[in-house]
Amino acid sequence: MENIEQKPNKKLIGIVLVIALVVVTGYLINKNSNSPTNTAMPDYFTDSNSWKEFNSVEGSFKVSLPTFPTHETNSINVPNTDITGTVELYSSEKGDSTYFIQAIRYSGGIDVSNPQANLEGAFNGRASEIPNHKIISSKFGNFLSNDSLDYLVQSNTYYIYGKMILVGQRMYALEMACEISKCSATDYQTFTNSFQLQ
Image: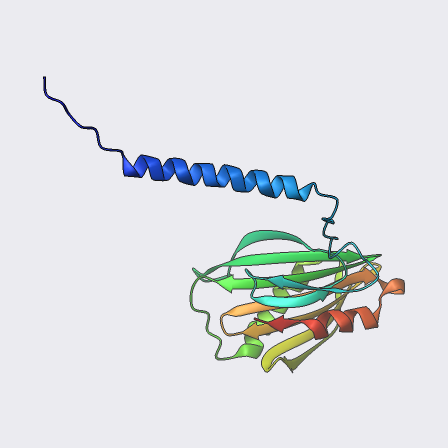
């Protein structure tokens, strides 16, 4: 019978060592987290007395909000084209007011040679989604060196203050919806003036 010398399987030994290291590290972290010297991190958005900065990686922006926003992603079709888009929608509430940020990313090339036409089309599409809407005002402007459109729409007993911003192939919409008698121009200015592109 031949005497076959078995060599240690270096790959297997390496895997076992990594697993052991992970288990020991996890144990030490868990043991230290129960230590009385460690304190829990306070929730950044728990303090509702002040606005907090929120950063959106998907939407490529940051903005101040009164509460941590909810987030959802939807798809849209651009009318009369084969172009689709992805909408990242964020919403945050403070009292009777709700703040919305929509970041719309288009899949194909949108002709942005006439930005006011793009903004007007987007605004008319948005206004048509609002039940019983009445356009109070709309005005083209410039925001963060980009073409924009400011608007105020009434829906029954609510106002919707809004700003649309066209940034290349991306459209942003900032809105505050509030009961007419409880709208805060200061809160709307805090919200829109804090918006920054990243």
